[in-house]
Length: 99
Image (tube, rainbow, N blue to C red):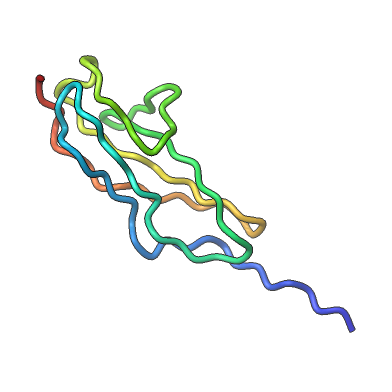
């Protein structure tokens, strides 16, 4: 008898969180949040300004640019494993202020 592995979709148990000061020139940092799932979950990120993806900004940190002045920043974390793909959105920052 062959026993197949039991796979479980990623499940977000603690939302991703952005920390830092929402000010031009300052660095924001995001966590992936806390996830469960089998097999192991891997993560990718996409940062957003007022709901629009910031092209090429997919790391755990973001130095805020002048073009983001007045905008609210969020980060969407995508968790992937063999069972599937799930996303979770971070808290939103306050509107970005001038340096």
